Image: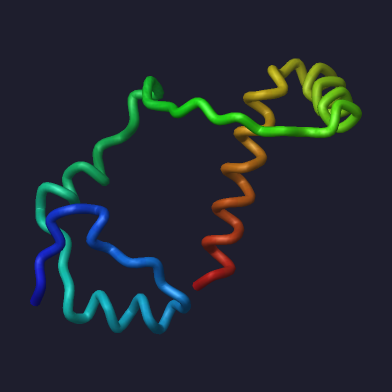
Length: 91
């Protein structure tokens, strides 16, 4: 069994079957498992730049305002929800 000591050692998988077969012969080091299980404090984030049509941005801000949300927070929530949905459908 090969021990994975760095997240960069894990390849991108084309299919769930490819990922399953990989994990049959590989295992995460305990330290990586510990890191993954520790909850984020919320202070960890990365700034990104996203180009958007001005009309779309205005609509997004208007919709967020109607929900008493910051448009960036609402957009982040939407991305998180869609990511979870995509990951569920993958399996």
